[in-house]
Length: 188
Image (cartoon, rainbow, N blue to C red; front, side, top):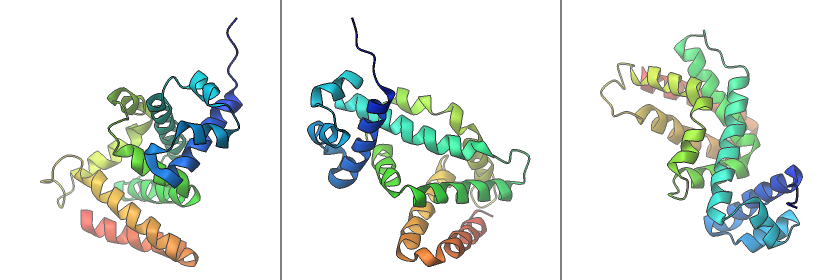
C-alpha cells in the first residue's frame, strides 16, 4: 500500500530548499535540503522524483504565491498608470517581505533547469500582469523596442529598488514611490 504524502512535509522540503539555495545556489545538495526539512533524503525523493523536479515545483510554488497575491485585488478597470503602480508596488512589497524567495526566484528565472512546461503552468495566473506589460509596450517610448523590453526594464528597476530598500529600510515607501515615478517617466 502506498504511503499518503504529507502536505506539511512537502511544504517543509520546499521551504528548506529556499534556505539552502540562498546559501549555496542551485547546486545546494539534496541531503542538506532534506536535513533542514527534518526528513530523510529518501523521503525527499518520495515527494520529488529528482532535484530538477524539486526545483521546478519550487519555481511554480514561488510564482503561484506571488501571482495569487497580485491577483487578489487586481484593478482591472483602472488606468494604465494605476495598474502599473499596482504591479510595481505589489511586486516590490512581496519581494521586500520575502527576500529569500526573491533571491531564489531570480536564480530559477534564468535557470535552464526550469522546463517550458513549468513556466507555462504559471501563464494563467499572469494574465493581468502580461496585459499591463503589453499595454506599456505600446507606449510611444517603448513601441519600437523588442517584445519583452517593458518587462525586462521593470524587472531591472525592481531589483535596483529592492537593493536600495534593503540598504535604506526607513526610506522604503519613499524609494518605492520615487522609483516608480522614474519608471513611469521612462515609459511615457
